[in-house]
Length: 97
Ligand SMILES: C[C@H](O)[C@H](O)[C@H]1CNC2=NC(N)=NC(=O)C2=N1
Image (cartoon, rainbow, N blue to C red; front, side, top):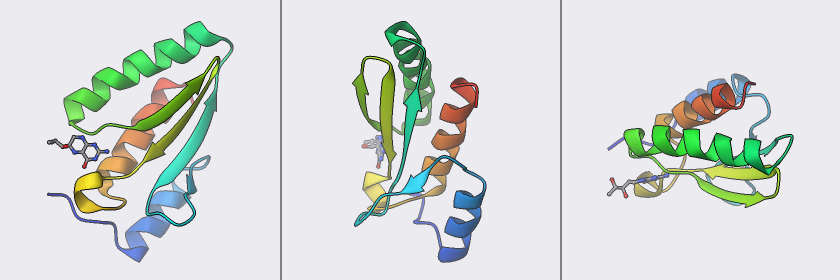
């Protein structure tokens, strides 16, 4: 199993993921994506879903109309791991960020 990030790895990860912020009171990161409309938001979620399934690593997310709020954490490790960083990067790329 992938282990939780060390403090150093965490600093590097957050520095390389502008737009993502640490969740208060929990070892997780979050980002809010805003799209032009629902179709774009859903398209994003569909593409991410395929990546997440292939990685066997799944986001917590909440969609309202054209926004998608995402929280990433590794439940098996009870915290932030390299898998979360990898999925966050993939999400940014898919969103065109
Ligand atoms: C059994 C299965 O491999 C695990 O439950 C996977 C699936 N997706 C997962 N997703 C996330 N975010 N964290 C996990 O620990 C996790 N574990």
